[in-house]
Amino acid sequence: MANNVSHTTEYRTLGKVLLVLMFCTFLTITVTGIHLGPLSVTVALVIACVKAYTVMTYFMHLKYESLLLKLLVGFVFVLFVLIILITFIDYAYR
Amino acid sequence: MSEIHHHVEEHRDDEASKLGMWLFIFTELLLFGGLFIVYSIFRHEYYQAFRESSLELSVTIGAINTIALLFSSMTVAMALTAMQKNDKKTALIMIGITLLMALVFLVNKYFEWGHKIEHGLYPGSALMPHLDRGHLLYFSLYFFMTGLHAFHIIVGMVLLTICLFKVKSGSIRTDKYALLENGALYWHLVDLIWIFLFPLMYLIS
Image 1 (cartoon, rainbow over the protein chains, first blue to last red):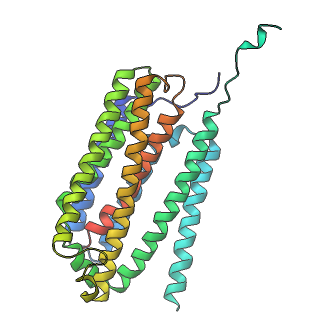
Image 2 (image 1 turned 30 degrees about the vertical axis):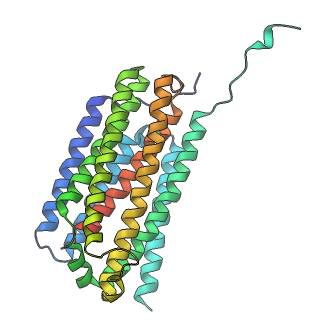
Image 3 (image 1 turned 180 degrees about the vertical axis):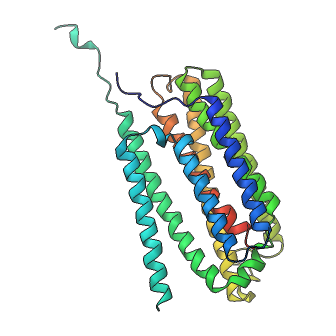
């Protein structure tokens, strides 16, 4: 029976992932608290992306999923970046 | 007739149902993604007003809610691990903790919104049209985006409550946990969205 092929993530790993995520949250709050000017939103978004990547990789088991699913996620990410780019270019040259 | 055909082949494809869940998650990500683009453009245009408005929000409440969601994301992942290890009791406890964290989030949100509503800040209030455009846009986006997110929390709670009862009754088992896996995926999505909502809404410096 190849019906349940999902990978089992150990409790310990999940706990470590939570610690990383908590640390990132602490970092975001601290970094945006000090005045970095326009850099601060960039830093906040980079940290948010790191957190999102961690959640998808370990909590959502993407690390152990099929290549098809990984490619699909990558495709959606690229699609979203393109939508942002096109919207912002349109907005900037109006 | 023969007795050979008595056993019924169950039609089941866990991989496909997981793929279906992911496709749905993509649509959700793009829905919130669109809202984030709207937010970014108005934030760029009315930066000062957005900054002032965001100071009205409590970073402490936002941080507590972030921690509650991250923690619940871990517990729901642990519930799945427990189910895979055929540990029904741990799975039930973990789903229970996840639901409790979701409730903590909503109670916090209730107080947060209640505080705003007391001050006459809510969509359609008498005060809102008198705000200048930047503040109006910030609070409209704030209520819409956090409201849509809170709605997802409620849907996730319903889904996980169903999972809780199905684990209890034994229809989610160690060899049949696709529903719990997909429910957990949905819950992680709710967490993912909040990861971006929190710095964008609460932390503008």
